[in-house]
Length: 427
Image 1 (cartoon, helix red, strand yellow):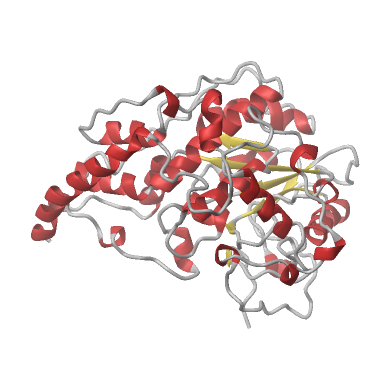
Image 2 (cartoon, rainbow, N blue to C red):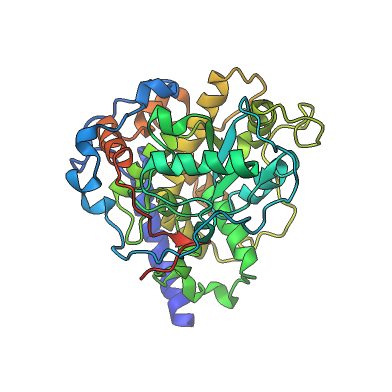
């Protein structure tokens, strides 16, 4: 182990320095460079478009997903889930048994939240459950959600659960299969639904994960085994690196440019992308007024705005900087996705008329994190800053996203096989 530590001290700084040299374009990948998606033209630049700008209505000629050529990055397990004979709605775990929100109000909106682990989704759920019937996680075994690859069927199931059971907040918490349509694409599928997701700085998410595993730094700065281990399988999807990119793209294997672009294409479809720095503004000025939630410390416009700072000990503060630098490098795809989420969140809040938006740091999160945890000092060119002026540099290729929407909006009505909480057993 001592030999490994010495080797790391020699090799990792060289590797990081070399890759940082490429950072003067802060994007880990150059979208469209592998021929998968055309140019960088954005959809409704410089702000996120209204729904009718990017909505795709499935054509009858593509009623079956098999009619559309499936690229390798849209393929996943061929296992068929075992559907229970009594597959009906049942109150899922973690649901608040409150009667608030029932009987349903047709003028109110159902919030569909995509909960990526250790991204503040539980805190978001705690707010919702004070005002309405809300579930913390999806339970496919109870036909609560994830019942169909077809977005129209899936949407009807969500709306039916609200009408019959008052369930107004639905949380999907699993790795999305590449073909699964979340958020939904067509206007008819999105009717009455509001799609949100939350994304934290990848390093902060990693720190939370490390705390949950009671991680303690090894003596002499040697990295723990899980840094090098390639985690696969159903249980591994909760621990593997770059969780945000993987869960939004369905990447079980090595992350590619296509996977990052898939994740970005999904982000464009959310009604509201929330990041750690915009959390308070998004909740107070968008989420709470959506269904007139009032009378709580959470839905109070006088709350302080800004990034939530944890008072817990950072387990990486006492870790060898070479090891931390290697982790930062490994998370580089997620830093790119996080910067794109920051821009989208800021643009969406501005478009909705939110005035008190916390100032967004223009420094790429990858560079900022490297400087905080290592001795490296880097300069960021003006064209690489994270701001609305440079949003075109972060957008995925438009043609690539449109091709994905055609697949997501044209799936056959079949039960999806998913990896995560509440998944049905494969045959």
